[in-house]
Image 1 (tube, helix red, strand yellow):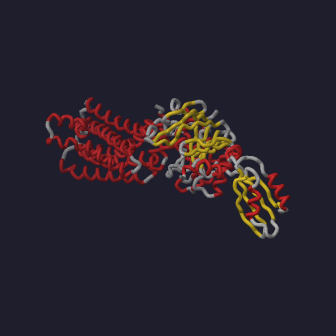
Image 2 (cartoon, helix red, strand yellow):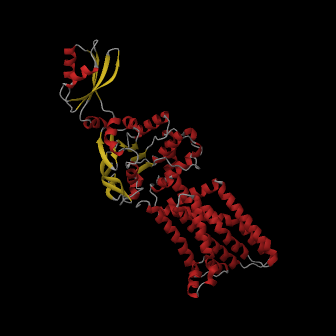
Length: 317
Length: 238
């Protein structure tokens, strides 16, 4: 077990930022930490990285407690804070050397590690430039390089791709993915495709509480009680949406039928069911009985967006 | 205490002093003022003493110390790099100490050229080496007090301007507190006199190194540094 968070609670004054959360991260796993803004993602990450102290509960990194063994934990963790703060007046190599020295990298291997990180993060051409002159994408790479300079077992990345353009996002993602093969990575984001692209597992947090924890596919399966089925049929003249709707609603478990779009007598319906009973067979029979030309019939996968909206929508109210 | 961390932070801060124009401007202004005020009256007094150098330096330090320490912590707070720093295996007091020593070293480098006043005056008159040594020791200690107080002020805010204004308030209070003694009842006067940096400085600058003055200096260097450490640690509990 690489990170073990148990019953973690954090108060800011009287408001609860994190409310009794527990989860674990295994080594070699990339965990996506999801939630709307202000849900408690950054607070939780700051506790794991020893920036804040929990109000109650405990966090263990590689078996070491963040409060009792804080210095050791900080040696094991590489951290990229939100907004990627950097010393803009230092050049890339100077900064990486500084980070390496503070992370207690052995003196003899500082220059080797700096060189490796410059190569891994593609900073070769920029290494003698001041960080202040670099573009946002390069700064992000410098931040990542500094976070990994001491070969940490655990990487905590707080919104590593925020503010980057699509090309840079893809580069940083693939960088994280390749790092994630050997290390434990926790990355927070509110960009959902990012989680699908990089993470093995997601923890969704809302108003300081964990509302979902598991591999993305499991969440997709378990969270949606009913199903959504898309049916496309070709109707003969004179048959209307209402006629079809009445027929379909006669099938048990069907809750709602809505018209997605129609074009020259071809109509596309979305059918929602209340439970997970498969009604596709019934729909097929119905089409044959009524003589509708069946063009398309499929179950819709719940997207991560749907899950997210479903789980966190109460924060909007 | 991990001295290699202190050294890393010390060197980094020292380098960033000399990488920016601020250090050079402050040093040049300091030396120009000092040189003008010293040589202006040197032949008027006709005494072979460096006392005016020390007295003027003491006054210039009131501006020098807040100016060079204001950004040391407040800027890290503002840009967020403090979060990076304290999540590395570095203790808060190592950060404070490294930054304090770098500012003190800058002050030391600023004072180095004033040694030529010693050689100049010594070549034309009879100069008491003990008094000069006492003056320099006193000045370095006094500088350390002001720098330490100003560094603490820098830890309080993420705004450099606020930091510098609060620092001015503190160092001016320490400096001017013994100038109001005549208005105070004698029981309070001795307390105020003991708090005043000027009083202890004038003792050392006379060449008398008294343990009371040393204790005063050491404690008033350490206390603000300790308070700065507490401020950095406080974030964990807020």
